[in-house]
Image (cartoon, rainbow, N blue to C red; front, side, top):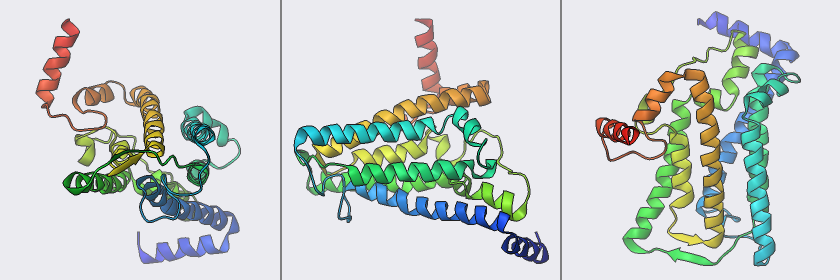
Length: 273
């Protein structure tokens, strides 16, 4: 794309409110997500924020547990329900298709803010690791932090957060060029869901684990398992035998110590039995 074409596109957006406003909305939501995700991870890890999974105003145990469970359930319902194809078909009856992902992202960010701000700490300590073990656990948290962002980049970071769709629709005015290909490169050669791997590491790697942190990690792990199961059903429907073959060779969340050939032999032996 040459400079003249780019200048013409920018001028067209700036002079046409019907194109400028939707793109600015998508850009603003992208910015909100850019703030929400790292803050959520820092909240979960108990790092630096005035309110974290372990710090902040607290109630007595029973109401605190009830509130936390309710918040986790509401987040899971929002995040999974709005990711279903039926929701996408419904919401595009009211907003342009290019902004469907933007609506999903802003609602997910809102649900995450409600979860974090409403969270009630449960300070009862389950473990507290010091020395080398504590350092390793803290390093695991930061490894998860990095893996989350690496996974989004491999998935097309801007498309995942809705900005690419709006840019193509309202700035360049060309069809969305998202390729309908199975991602099997980079981290996807090691695990099928590296984004979830990063989240699991961030949730569970803690040098100090409280009852509240355990509830957070267990609740969101349950959501991840259910959400991944539903996502994989969609991927099988979308890619068919290609995804089944990929899933047979690559583990879901954590690398396997077995080679691909060894895993295949074990699966064949299990089928024979």
